[in-house]
Amino acid sequence: MLEMAHRFAELASAAPDPDREVTATPGWSVTDVLGHVASEPSRYRELAMGAGTWPARAADLPAFNAEQIRSLPTRDPRQLARTLIADTESLIATVDGFGGEPRTMMFDGDQRVRVDRARGTLLGEFVVHGYDIARMLGRPWPIDPALVPMIMDGLNQVTPAWVDPVRTGRHTATYEYRLRGLARYVYRFVDGRLVVDHDTPGPVDVHISAEPVTALLLNYGRIGPLLPSLNGRLLAWGRKPWLAAGFSRRFLPA
Image (cartoon, rainbow, N blue to C red; front, side, top):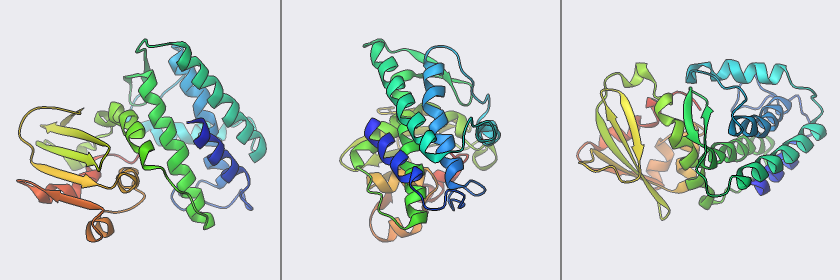
């Protein structure tokens, strides 16, 4: 995680125009994105220690993030980068200090999650927002597929609170989602409520197999399913394969 924090900090703080809008996050400049990401490690550490703040509903997250950006103590990119690295180091030390104890903390959407797995959602911030900035700048941003299961393990803790009630309604279906060569997850919707596990028993309506980095970008809404389906990076089969096309749309934006 610390390596990705360094990569993100170096990329964002060296952007030639820090006020340029990042296309993937409309209304946010490079400095806004950097400030948001730089604020998260200290927030995670506070939450891990039983304090801190979080939005009570997933729908409140955009306003929560906007206030976070408005309240930045500095907008100097170099200082924000230094804060990001220092606070990530402190978070890692704090969580490592818990040893093997599976501590929990409150988190976005008013959910209690495991602290160690929550680091995956922070890793996702580094990886995906780095992708956003690099793409805008026309620079390479290679993503190690091995990072994706760690990010997914973090996301899956909070995914039930991110179900879009409008698009999901009383939907009932079971999806098996495979990260090729790495991991398997089962998403079971029952009357619109979601449970996520690795090995939930029972029949599966649709099986989805995705190249790991493709799955990550799909889950964060950075790409659509059409091109990956055409080039074989995303496949679906089973009793109801048509459900795969709408899977990612059943969730609120991350």
